[in-house]
Image 1: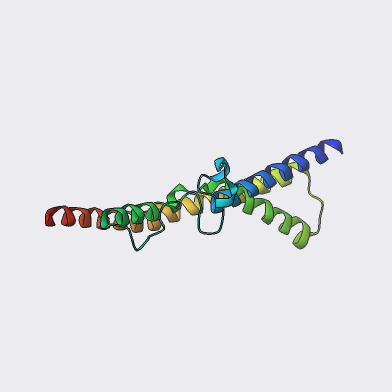
Image 2: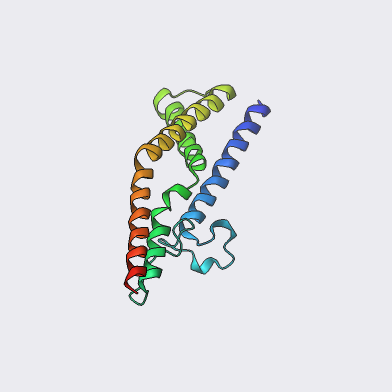
Length: 152
């Protein structure tokens, strides 16, 4: 019985740690390494920090900011999100749908399978769809850079 409690406790602690880290990555410029937490807010996340445009930005700076924003999705930590969603799904499946108390191996296997499916699906979609969008944006900004350089 204590082994089951220990494993569940470890799963919950890891889940909580990942949830806090994910929230910090979404809202803080350096993610968990952000020293000054007062800069942490919605729209100031780690993967797209520095992409906010300003009317005072020169064209070259705006192009850099577009590049940062275009590559933000690729910089996300997908395995962590997959684990978070897998844990929530396992609770939903066992607690609300099946209404059973699963064995440790059932919980671990369910989290592993769901997490793997989510991770694989995200990467497949990213490779066959999102990557092409990012490539097109980056190619466009590079062409704009060339055209701006040729104007001078």
